[in-house]
Image (cartoon, rainbow, N blue to C red):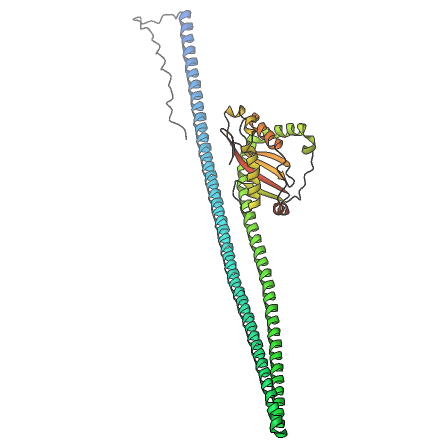
Length: 416
């Protein structure tokens, strides 16, 4: 489309005025006048040609400007459409990512809830089983006491029967004397009665002995059942303990993975800030202590993490607290008293400790922004080593632990 640009027009050439003469007869034309007229006509023609040329150039330039404006408008519309499409794509990706993150978080929450409910159900079943085992033990103890009481009662009855039998025998002896006086026939009847009584007494003693053996056998069975129940209970408690430890370890690992993921994202944003300082500090540390800097990296080490102060592993938390107190309660602040007067941010430092208490490495997750402060912190950590060997329970789990704290300086060092 050609823009509506007013095209300038050349002014009309002034008419050639021919002087009138009153003479009827033509006069001869002066040659100089003829030359002037021709020159004037030539100039007018050139002026007209130049005006036409300028007008055509103006028209061509207007067309070029119109085409350029149209092209710029098309390119601007194309760029706007591209930018809008890119913004829509970025927004769609963001919404998709947010939706996926929300779904993953919900799945993780549901899984944690399910595991927690399962753990509570297992604990409840364990408690019920413990109560049942206690009831069995109490029943076994009551049965054992009843058996002992029955055996005691039978023994008492047997002794009482023996006493009565002795008394009877004495009476029989006395009666024998009488029977000897009364005659042989009466003596024979008394002797028969005595023998019968002795036989019955022997039968009663045999029954009492058999009953005592039966009571002893039942007591042994109850004791064996009780010992078996104790062994089963111990095995069950050990299994519950192992399962609880496994669940806690799994929970700690999940929490550590989540924390590691968050820290990794944060470290990725902050790594550019502290990379240069860390490399320079590492070079200086290698120059000071080549024996430690040249230690080989062992990829198979079991590593534990403590990012903050809270963790289900009480031994790990206690070890980190003991290490922090070395900095907070001693005179370590004197090494930083002057440099911390400079404007800085609170650094976040990860200290890796080996099982023997030596320092494996010191990493600045967030630098203080002052090289002297970072170097002083590194010197404090290495100068106060070793920090003591791991407790046996902690050493069975980890070869290296990484403790991350934020260092705050006011009148002393405080690790948060």
